Amino acid sequence: MAAYICTRFCIKQFKDSITFIQRRYRVKTKWAATRPKFPSTELALHNFDTTYSMQFKDLWPSIRVAMLCEQKYGALINSFSSEPHIITELEAQGCKDFISIGCSSNEVHQRSQEDSTTSHRDSTELEPAALQHNISLDIKCLVFPQGDTSRFKPARPDSSGILGYYLLDAASVLPVLALDVQPGHTVMDLCAAPGGKTLALLQAHSVDYLWANDLSVSRTTRLRRTLRSYVPKELLDENKIHITSTDGRQLGLTEENRFDRVLVDVPCTTDRHSAMVEENNLFKRSRTKERQKLPLLQTQLLVAGIQAARRGGHIVYSTCSLSQLQNECVVQQAVSLAQEELGITVQVQDLRWFAQRFSDTFHFAPHLSVGELVLPHLCANFGPIYMCKLQRIN
Image (cartoon, rainbow, N blue to C red; front, top):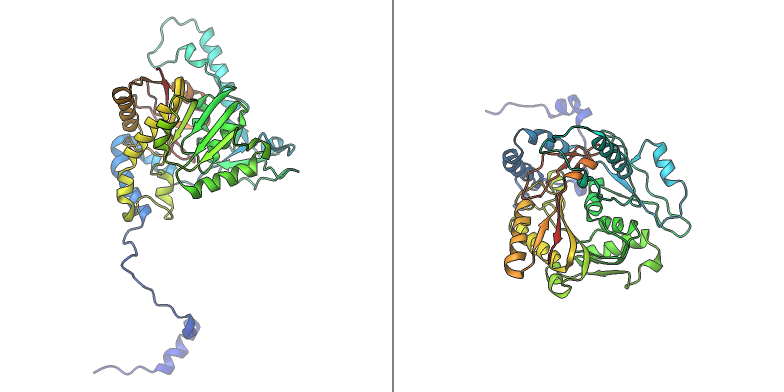
């Protein structure tokens, strides 16, 4: 027999905790079949824990923590802006240009090597010739000190409406620096959107002609909008900056042997985004096949980039993933395909000098070598990045 409960007593006893909601505002929680049982970010982390713990072993816990920390940004100074005192104001807040710092510390290291009287060198020590590489000091990117994740204020427009700096992950500038664009060079940015690396390429004022391409029309629309905010109208002429929305895999054939420098910053799993953001996450179950096809797509894009480069031209392949399947394996496969099917010989360049030059700002995990390939993995508040520099021999 059910016990009698005095409703009046219950309402009086708990009146402070009762909230009456109008019927039209009452919503019943729905557990639809489309609602994922496990969030995509959780699936991504599980995947990373399984694969990267085997790849990095004892280093993985620290890399994992860095990947899940608050993201740190850099301010890419826009040399087209006439806004005065931008750098001075940022430096007053504690920011430093990591590019000029890296070059200065490299000069000190080089002098110490030249002054050394030691006749024997460790096999891992760099030769002086490897330190002769030039970095364009016209490209400036300011960051807060290590461990400081302070936010930059929105950039101010100058009298022409051109913004003073562009906020991006400072790691994104590294592939542009490694590309080593010289005055008069023609450059292709094969997967250009949303435009941070494209804008960085233009900062050195060395590019004679830039072709920026991306398959997505919406992303190239964003790219155009970005360039209009940072580059004077007279420089956005089609004869200087050509923007297209086409399949980059086809440009290797149509633009073969044309460019001095080619940047192949391919679509990837974008590890930090996948581990932290549900929106547009590649680890959604509905995107499993798309994710599995990434290495093939990346290989095809890199082969197209190799084809588009001139004899002696340089190609930089980059991702923001730690996956060996998307990094070393793609490079190995593309180099083999270029040689066997196209008769193009490609030489992988040694990037140890590059990792050493910027080691004061970024933490690079110990590299895994494929021939002369150096695998710098970037962590500690910055997103992970992989780079490989190639040179077309014939």
